[in-house]
Length: 374
Image (cartoon, rainbow, N blue to C red):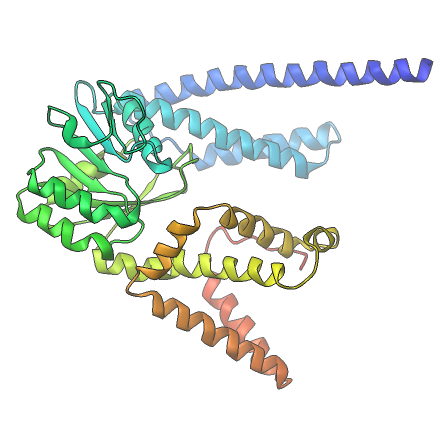
């Protein structure tokens, strides 16, 4: 009984320590917010890599001093830095937002990316109105159809499913919609003609592709692609919406977008779908495979698990509707055929050549981590 009491005592002590840690996290958050406000008022960059290095070096020094393993400390401090940046980014977006007194419409605002844009625009001070076929009870700011709103908007975001985007854009062109208009479709091939019709109708239109998921809180390290449809004012206005964030903004043509996305999204999706399809068809239990997994298998499994949970209809559209899909598909099938042939013919030198060529191709990426495992 004494041992059980001691066990409960130590468990209670751990709970108390956890509360202290969380209280300190709250204190750290408040300090971070003050730093963010200072940076915003003095037009300083949100991200300070020199300071981040200093924070990490101080943490490693403390880990050695208190004889705590460096690895978990590094993981925790990295998360704290990321969380701090997210807090500061949100504060700066709110402080520098240009939406005060302006109205924004998000068509498809109940979808995942529609919800993200609604919150993003609200954080900048826009009064956000939502039009979505999923609206059950209509109100002043919620309608089933965007045409039911009796006023114009300063910004209109088209965030409906890819297959419906062109139709909505054409409706906006017919109504000669005022204000900035942009779609957020994953592919531009299906909406290209509709975007040009909006332009020809005299609408202030551009095209945007946020290269991140709807659960993204911090845009640091994330990319947002902007495509000029023939209206520089619209392009600049859309970019201004993200100026206070740490997102990397990239400009390209509509055609270039779909060609690159065939590899960035199409190829990566295809690889992971093939990976978990091969596993599910193998006859091996995934739990058994996971019991003996390697570092690389775990990493691949984590990505594949996320892909498998996504909307299969959207992912099919991304594959099928891209006019450049054959480039990535052919590249993948050719590479796989060559590698398998190399293995079957016992050609080690060719196999080494594939690995060497890949290493040379990828080595310029600054964030590639070296692994001491498989």
